[in-house]
Image 1 (cartoon, rainbow, N blue to C red):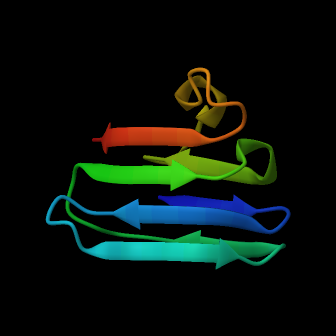
Image 2: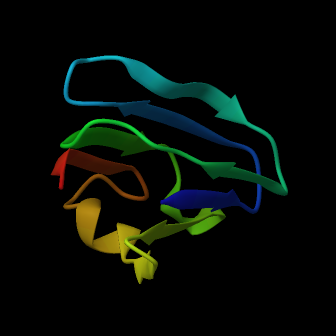
Length: 78
């Protein structure tokens, strides 16, 4: 799965064992392809600046904001 960052954004991704796969500010125009043990925990600071794919398909990060403005929090991405 992967992330395409359009503008600088803060991201934290952990796998099922709590291992940090990615954390911190991600630079504009960067791309991350990640692997980790499922389920994953994902926090993205501004979904308007990130495109995410999951299992080869675009993933709707806006659905994961749930009243947090543009911050997405996915506790169990499987």
